[in-house]
Length: 192
Image (cartoon, rainbow, N blue to C red; front, side, top):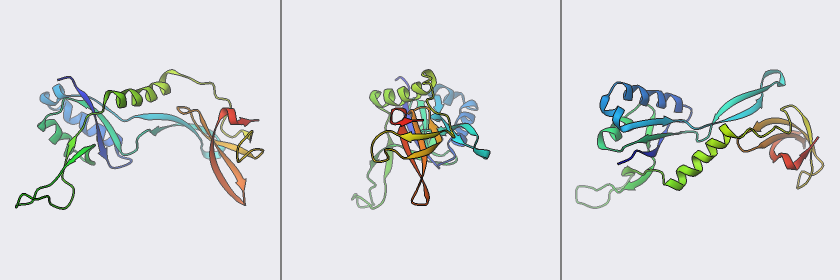
């Protein structure tokens, strides 16, 4: 069977560590080299205000706490990934636990890994592809003062504090009610 994409749930913030662990196990096992094809931590570029209010471009995890693995599923591969450091489980459906009498026991049963559907794959990789291929010109830089054109915040002025290049959104910080309120807008909703 051809390899499919599976989602592995891991401890948030340790996605890169999980990827490195899986890749190291694959490198040390000929059998796993045949079953595990690719390990991916989806990221997107985001521009934020750094030290001294200078714009800094960073990578942000698209799915915090999850790693995508393209592989041919079998018991050994499942066991190797499931028992890697910081891996919680595969994403899939539950198989109910049975007690000694054959009835259904309380608690979570065994999770049966479910591969992504072709539609889910397409949506995820289109979103990743947008980040890499399309370079939308940035209408406003981080630190620019802007005014909202319409909606509930119409006429309010604020400062651009973050740009999500993938979604083409601008996070604006307003000084409202003696506190700073960050809100997201598209470029069409803003003016200098």
